[in-house]
Structures are given as C-alpha cells and as structure tokens.
Amino acid sequence: MGYNFAREVDKIAEEYPDRLAILCVSQDGHEERIDYATLRNRTNRLASALLRLGIKKGARTLVLLPRGVDAYVVYLSLIKVGVTILPGSEMLRSGDILYRMKHSDASVVIAASNLTPAVDEVRSESPTLKYFLAVGEAVPRWTDLDGLYDLGTPAEFIVDTEDSDLCFLSYTSGTTGGPKGVMHTYDWPREHLAVAGTYWFDAKPGELAWATAGPGWAKWVWSPFVAILGNGATAFAYQGRFDAATYLSLMEKYKVGLLCATPTEYRLMAKVKGIENYQLSLRSAVSAGEPLNREVIDTFARVFGITVRDGYGQTENSLLAGTLQDMEVRPGSMGKPFPGMRVDIVSDDGEVLGVGEIGHIAVHKSFPALFKGYLSDPDRTKRAFRGEWYITGDKGRKDEDGYIWFEGRSDDIIISAGYTIGPFEVEDALVKHPKVAECAVVASPDEERGSIVKAYVILRNPEDANDPGLVAQLQDHVKQVTAPYKYPRAIVFVDSLPKTTSGKIRRIELRQLETEPTTTL
Ligand code: ATP
Ligand code: MG
Image (tube, rainbow, N blue to C red; front, top):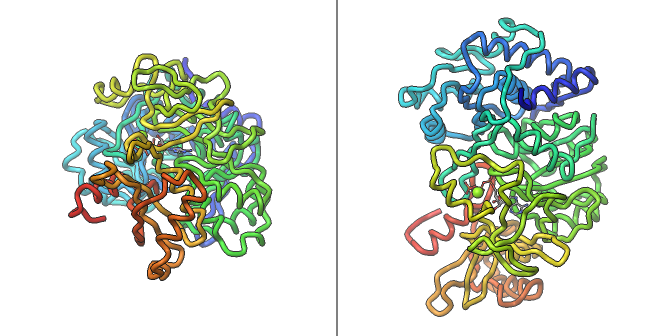
C-alpha cells in the first residue's frame, strides 16, 4: 500500500476532529465553515458513492470548480478513489477543455453547474467522456453530485494506491506556448509536504492560512490544498474577485496568520492608499509564481513588520528554491535550494557552473518531487533532461552563499550588443518608479545591436503618458537603479499586458509584436 494524501488528512481528523479545516467567505460576506471530522465524513461518503457509480481507480477526471469547500471535498474524495485528477480552472473555455480531454482521454468530468455549458459544447468531440457530474444547481444530462452523498457511507474509505500510480495530470500555465500535461504520482504530495510544506510554506497546525491560488493550477495543489490540509492548518478561501483593499480587509477581519499570494497581488496590495491603517495578524507571508519585486518586500516590512519570502518552482516539480523560514533575505534573490536538494546552475552541456556564471537553473534527477514526464510527449520529456539534470527552462546564477538569482525564462533573455540582460532586473527597476504600475520588458530587433531592451509600461495614472519628458525620466531612473547598459532604449505605454489566465505575463506575445509588427495585442 502506497502513500495516499487523503489518509494524511484523515489522520488529522482523527486526532483533532473539531479543528476547522476550511473557512470560506463569499463576495457578499457569507461564511461557510467545515471541521476536519466533517471533511472526513463527506469525503468518505462521496468517494464510496463515486465508486458505486462505476468510477474506478485510474479514471482520468477533469475537475472544473472554483475556490470553495466543494473543491476540497471533491479533490480529497477523488484521491480516496485513486483516480488521476486533471486540475482545471474555472477560467478554461471549451477549446481548452477539449484540448485536455483529447490529450488525456479523460472519462470523468466534475464541473460547477455554471461551467457545464462549456463542456457540453465539446461533448460530441470527446468520445471517451462517460461521467458528467455537476456541482450546484441541477443541469440536464448531468448527474447531480450533491445527491451522491446519500448514496455513499461515512465509514473510512480509501482505495489502495501505489506510489507509482498517476495522481495529478497538471497542465502548465502556457506562458511560453501550449500547456503541457505534467505527470505526478501518488507519492508526490508526500515529497512536496516534506520539502516545500515544511521549510517554506510552513503552515502551523490550526493556523488560519490563506493561499490565494485558484483550483486549476499547480499552485492550488501545492499550497491551498496539500500544504494547508497536510499541515493540519485551516484553509481560508475567498470566492470574490481580486481587489487589493478587500484582501487587506479580509486579512484584518479574519486574523489570517499565513498568506501565500502572487507577486502581482502583493504589488497591488502594497500600492493601496492607507495601507498603514490595516491591523494585520500576519505571522508569515510567502510569494511564488513570478519574480517578487523588492518594492513589495520593502513595503510589507515597513508597514507590517513582515518579510515576504519568495519561492520558486514549476508545475514539473515542487518548490525548488526559496527564502526559508528564519533565513536571511536577499531581496531580488529567489533564496536557496532546500537542504539536501540538488538544484544548481548548469551549462548547456549539463556541467555545474561556478559562482556568478549565468546558466540554466537545473534540478538533479534524484529530486524526489520531480515529475514523471509529459503525458504522450516522450520527445519533450527527453529534451528536458541533460545528463543527470532536468533543465527548468529558466536562467539564473548563484552567489557565494548559494542564493539563486533569477535572470528570466531562457526564451525571454535579451542579448543586446553582446550583453546578456535578464528582463526581470529591468522590470524590477522600472516598477520602483512611483508612476509605474506594471511593466514587461522584451527584446526588440535592432540592426546595430542585434536587439534592444524595450519596455511595455502601464502607468498608475494613464494621463502621464502625455508628459513628453517621462520616457527619459524612466530611462534615467533605470540607469540609476541598475547597471546603466540595461536601460530600456524603447518605452511604450499600454493599458494592459498579455497574460495567461493565471495572471502571468506572456512576453512571448510582446516579442511577436516586435518581430511581426502586424500582430496586435
Ligand atoms: P509554460 O511552461 O506552459 O510556459 P509556466 O512555465 O508559466 O508555463 P508554471 O509551471 O505554472 O508554468 O510556472 C513555472 C514558471 O514560473 C517557472 O519556470 C518560472 O519561469 C516562473 N516562476 C515561478 N516562481 C517564480 C519565482 N519565484 N521567481 C521567478 N520566476 C518564477
Ligand atoms: Mg514552464
């Protein structure tokens, strides 16, 4: 019998039945609370009912649910049945859904009732789909999931799973191209908990922890799901739209102890007027998904006395490096690899590089939370490895103390007049300017220099774009904050930046604008 994450959560229910497992707040302030004993009861019922319905171990199951209690109950129940979960976001459209169905031969789909029309649109093109379960209101041609609980029994119910059984088929964000199907086995949550859950995320038993990632991304599985429940903390979920001031108010009202958010969310919170007036009870704060700007770290330290700790990882693995609890922060660095884990900087040939040399951020193949390959894409899987190393596709360097400094995604690196320039450092400098809200930096072809650094900038006040001196002002600002050769020779002001549905900037689209000027955003 192998490891099963649902058993881990049931153990907590056995020891602390009354402890709050989930506290969910809707946009209009409605609260839903469920303790660990109730969570166990519900997941036993649902898991036994799903099996009775005919859903078997290994069935590939696409889940399309928003944040909330149902997402937790459904994920845990599916793990009890031993299926392979395809985490899906509520933002997926019919084309994205069809892509996943076809790519994975999924046989089960579980969707919030408002998301069922998108599945119905491609139903006829997904012949492998057999089970359609809707959560919420009744939907014609869909089985009502809420009605299933009575079909099951509350007795302990976990199908035997092996460590090598496929647990998650997580699709990447699609920042650099089409999403890839990343395979993780049933032992992955154990390894993730042992590494990221302990050294970095570090939720305390019973603590109210808010990890803002929505279901559908690897990060939802990592933090709100595995790291919070696996540590016996209480998961806070907010079902409303993101609004920086609302987030601060919610943290104040509910006394959130641990926050895990994206750099963009932190950035916008740090710019809320009157941020000093919020009385937060934060004990710890972490950020992941994109580079974390110093500006944010400074504001949170000054206002709340809290160090926002960066963490770096990918759908393909788990957290690879981070500023661990009680570790000295080097603002701008992603922190260090976890104790005992081999994450290093290597050359194109897979040779480990020295201090200060820029190369691939790579993970030794012995890393326990490394993926088992891309589904149905052995060539891509093979290409991702060089000798003993898995190549992340990101570039960075290490300093004399082993801190890793992010340069950018390999494809985003700019080579200008022989200089190698990572977009992150330039972006980091630009957002420090008080007039800049957000920005993205890419290479733009240039006859003389090969490429030049070009910045797409969203201003806090769009009217400032009319100020003829602003471009030069921003250029001077960058020259003062970072090495002058990195300054953006071209700057354009835009209203929005192209992003993935998970909110990551798609520099690939901006680069296309540069090379194919007829493309529009
Ligand atoms: P795709 O692989 O489909 O292009 P993606 O790489 O964005 O999409 P994810 O697996 O969700 O998909 O994201 C992992 C990537 O996000 C990393 O490879 C890295 O480029 C970036 N990233 C994650 N955390 C950090 C961080 N703390 N600092 C800098 N970059 C980060
Ligand atoms: Mg990637």
